[in-house]
Length: 409
Image (cartoon, rainbow, N blue to C red; front, side):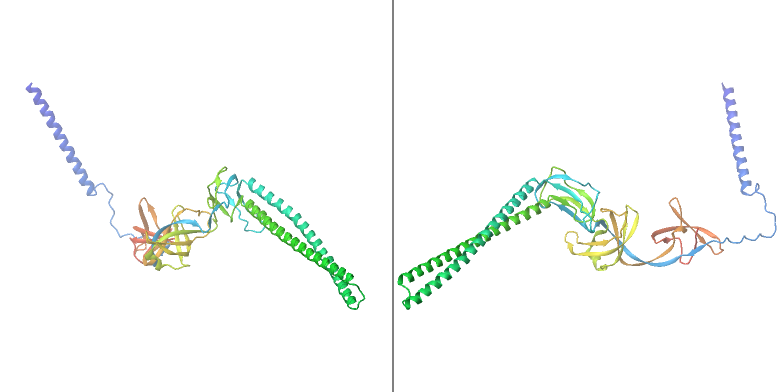
């Protein structure tokens, strides 16, 4: 038993000795490599000349002044937006448009306005026919009244002629009586004839006044009936809901069978040809802006910046938020639609920044690199920290100095 134990101990000692020798050998080889034993030596002789620096295109780092801005959020809206409603209460018979449709408001000469919806019109048509029938009846009555008035006036003329004749006869008989050429009976007869003709003339005048009164009454009734016809026609026109201007239908709030009421919105139409950004600005920023001022609007969804012009400053502050609504006109662009989120850059000062062309920067992962021309004429790689961009130029926050030359591709 002891013999086997001694053999195991001798074998373990040999392994430890071999391990130590291996480590020693590795250290010796490593020291020889660090000393350059395994590297070819450079033969002694004169130093070789440095190759000529490459020709590259460069641009100097510039210092420029930019406006200091603060972003205010807003929403893209159409300058012209209308909520179309009915002027009468009626049931919707038909809806002829859908959301997103282009509608024509008849702005151009000869163009027809788009019909958005039609309301039930049976009751209004019945009222219109009744009013038109009444007008026709009153027209006939008025013609009859005018004929009666003409006849009464003719009777007056005849009665007046008869009265003048009997009056002349009576005066002549009176003159003859004074000269005893006529009897009293003849004078009395002439007086009776005169009185009768005057009575007939008075009655004829009364008939004329009665006929004139009837004509005036019928005329008034006819005018009232014509007004009823005009009102019924207007009411009938209100059963056709048309587009108020040319634009796009963005909301449909009614379906067939719904009851339309005056003032209740049925459709929402916008004029998408002219959009604006509506934003609420803090009261402290209002003195820094003026109407007609150029402002930049960033639309995050499009990743684009649009030039704008301040069109309106609403002269009212919200007491809850202490903000004022402003409206910035945007250029016409097919990508701009109503409701987009936007950021308005409000200038409130200036600042200096170093800038370089954006194409001089290379992105390696999360790092930004530029090639800078060194004093020896050779490009040197340098890490930089970048800021905002301005028309192809990018701000350099750190890593470069003014007038240094950066290599362009």
